[in-house]
Structures are given as C-alpha cells and as structure tokens.
Amino acid sequence: MIKITELAHKLILEKKDISIAVDMTVGRGMDTLFLAKNANKVYGFDIQQQAIEITQKLLDDNQINNVELIKDNHENIKEYVTEKVDVAIYNLGYLPQGDKDIKTESSSTINSLKSVLEILNFDGLIIIVLYSHNLEEITEVFNYTANLSSDYDVLEIKVLNRTTSPFIISIKKR
Image 1 (tube, helix red, strand yellow):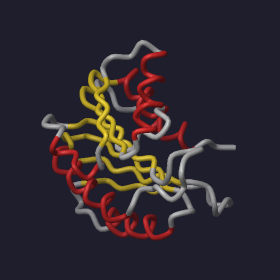
Image 2 (cartoon, one colour):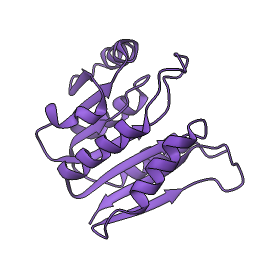
Image 3 (cartoon, one colour):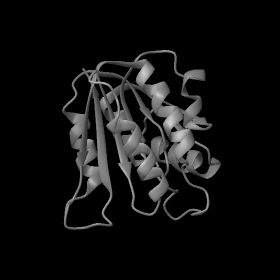
C-alpha cells in the first residue's frame, strides 16, 4: 500500500538545497523531523501544546537543533517567518491519538496558504496532505488551489481506487 506521507517526503526530497522549511501542522513531529534533516532551518506551527511538547521531545531524542517550534495558528506565519520559504508542508486534520474535535479549519488553512504563497521562493514547494474526514476543508483547499494563477503548478496526487485514502496537493512556484 502506498503511504501518502512517505510520498510527500519523496516529493520534498526532489528539491535540492532547502534553506528554510515550514511544517505548518507539527502534530506528532514526523514531518518536522524529516524537514530538519533536509533543511538548514525549520519553523513548526501547531495550536496544541501537546503537539509542541511531543515534537520537541522527538527533536531532542534525535539531537536536532535547527527547529523553532511555535504554538500558534499557521495563519499567523508572517508574524514569525521573515525569510523566503523553500518548502512548506501541511498534514491537515487532527493530532493523531489526540482530541479529534481540535482540528485544522478551512478558513485558517486558506489564510495560511495565502501567506505562504507570498513568501514562497521561486521554485518553492508546498505539499498539502488532506484526509477524507474533513470534507469542508478538502473542498475549500481544492477550490482555492485549483484556481491559483499560472505562476504555480498545482498537482493532485491520489490513490483512485481507495476513496478514503489521504491525498496530496502539491504547489510549485514557477
């Protein structure tokens, strides 16, 4: 079976010389750790203290020190990140093994996407992993990204014969 999160990481690995990367939803820290091993500097956002603590422990256990974790909504990215961004990843939904009532919301996700697009470097990459349990967010993100200008290449990557499988939207700035 294809693991969408592994595929997301493979897409990011195609990008060489990643200076600044952002994990827009740190969750349990796996994307943050992956980015930290492949970028000079990583910013990680999450609204839950539990996610920040889990991720910090994972980073400490792996002796990673190039990450700044930020307990705030990802839509406030421009308050913290002043550099141009090479890679951003979203793993939308809720914290695995966490409170399923606390989840990403389409309005803040779209606002953060708008901000990331403004600070994304030429040839920069945004990876968005979406899950079937939040249809409103899927619809909003899909509609927003499908209507981006031709300054961006937008791809949808999905397993067609598994309707509940997560899928990826990839945005590359041209």
